[in-house]
Image (cartoon, rainbow, N blue to C red; front, side, top):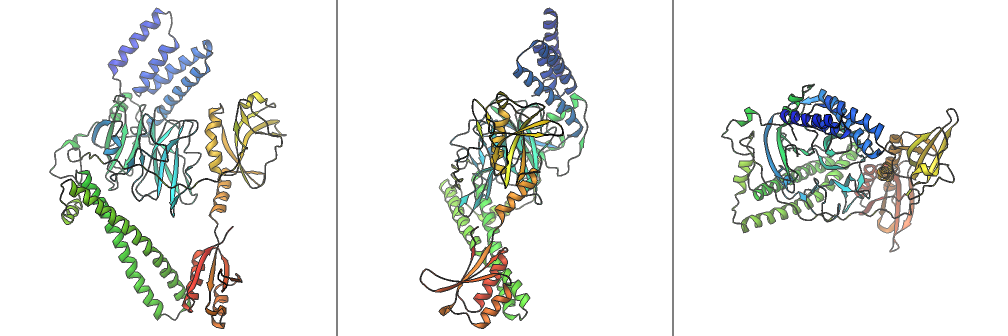
Length: 622
């Protein structure tokens, strides 16, 4: 919301007169003056007003909650003062006001990709801003927000493995605050996560953030506030970069009533130039996001996508079908060439390399065929829906029209309303049910009887340090709390809980902060020795990901001929070979373990080439 200078002047006069009549300014009038300055991007004046109000309250008030809230306001104003150094002036192409209940349907995203009912978040959305989960058809992983047992909305991720979706998990400690995080949206390349937060470094309300994925660390980076004008003292959320790389869209309730929201369309800039802007009026002007004059020029270009949502959905699915068919043709043609090369080659190393390629391509084709069958069936359903509604389809004409390169601007950009998708019901993998007595929040806290840290990977939450021994009252209901004394300094360190996985300790961090320990943070141990959290996570990740394989085959008649036996020994040096029996009494052989699946599959391919038909590659139980 932008308050103009006239409003600011009138408000200041009113509060000045009020203060004069009461023989001195009071904290409430200073706070209101600070709020007005804050929303007008005059962060220097806001900090000054909040500081004076804080001095009065700390002297006269015993309400610690009001004092804490005022300190939060002052911190946000100080953040705004720092963020002025990195201000971006985008080219605004279009904007439109929509109802808060359906604004997300006007984003250029696949049709039927928003779900207002999901077993991930419950049957309904009661958050004032977060209204739906983004879950397109054929999605392999889903990022979403859901309220935890404390009522705080956190970001979770689940991904498809075979027919089951993984147990929803937090991302990491950095993408987690004591307030809500909503509308997580992944960039088209899958490397950047955009989301809105009310609890991270910001200027008030929901601000917009981005976090980068690191392939090396296999983790999301610390979120960065996207700065002005993406973030503002109002609520800003749901940032999306269009798949064609032309537009950046986000929503904000600045200059809106409580039941509406503006969706802004900006010209996408992959390398935005940020400059320092100290003038509050100039900051207000940039934050208003007025459509640029150049964008208002009329154009004869047609929109680059059909306006009808059904046609758009048909085009999207047709493109999916074409892409899968192209992939299948590529792998089928390559497979034929590789088989011919294998048959003509006498070089052992070349044949092994070709075997790897052939196996890889053979494994992809059935999966692509399944995807193609599903996509074609969905395309036929869309065709029937269109025909039922009296819309004729000419695929060649539609695809020809939508393949044209058209640059949109304010007059040619069309906000098209997408159709809401059906209820989302995923078949989720159930977490292992374990009796967890390591962490509790009750009326009375408890110290651990034994402060020894168990072996293996262990996480705890550090809650405070003290020069003297803590009392049960200072635990604020947390248990079990572990005490450690450092003899050199005489300092006591107190940490709560024993958690075996990072996701477990992360899920309890907000409960600890809500208990009053706002500076609590996670610490880690490996075999009783304190280590960096990143090191423990890396060890935990390695333990989960480590998989071994074995080759199992049943030769005809149960006997190994000399050539086959020699070939196996040559290709599996150092591996164990055991003789066993199948359930129907035939002789089988087991070779392994192989840490590399390709190595096991190469041996299996060799055994098949020697005339053995019954050969499999199994995962060894840990």
